[in-house]
Length: 295
Image (cartoon, rainbow, N blue to C red; front, side, top):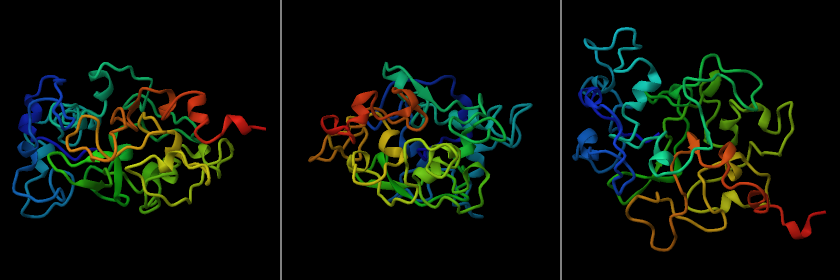
């Protein structure tokens, strides 16, 4: 998730998302400095997610001690953890992870259903509770995996490409801390364990030991010389035959030598293609399988 959040006083004042897009991909009227300040030269340690010390005052950005709602959870400003996350990540202050597609007039074909399901497609067991934001993300920056270059991520207000762990847990689905050191097929299989090549159901072979770097090109999504991994087929909607730079379609400062290819920025929250596919139908299959030489 994008690491922007707004103070609790602002959260409580927000009535509804405003889908007027900034050039950097956010909606609403708040600027980056409204939450992060302008006395910084990078993004490390900014915002409420982690890096807590005796001198910081970050807890109050999310937890409201005296005016939390009755029947709420963990002194958060909304009734559930996910609703509290989405009070910032609804697009009014930071990127709306569940609004990018519909706000642009698109139709959602697949989504991870927050607070409504514990069933995992391709999973050997249901989650211990309904899927919610903290099922995948460590909001306090504990037990997180290594940073990686986000395919569609660039620091707001910055011309620098950034690496981020997106607050993804390294112990997703109850595994021991450190089980998933990097983001990739093995991390996805932490829940979808029957969709890798070590589960009881052997579907499309997936290499869970492949090393790769996500970002900036389609090399990893159309390389048929190695076993495929999840992100070759499941990622942000894009034309995999066209190179792209690690820049959002609506962000500024695109790389001059490569187009901005990703259509939306909602993966793995939502997709305009069924089953979070990069492309649909035979168009996807023929990226790796040459129809002219099929047996």
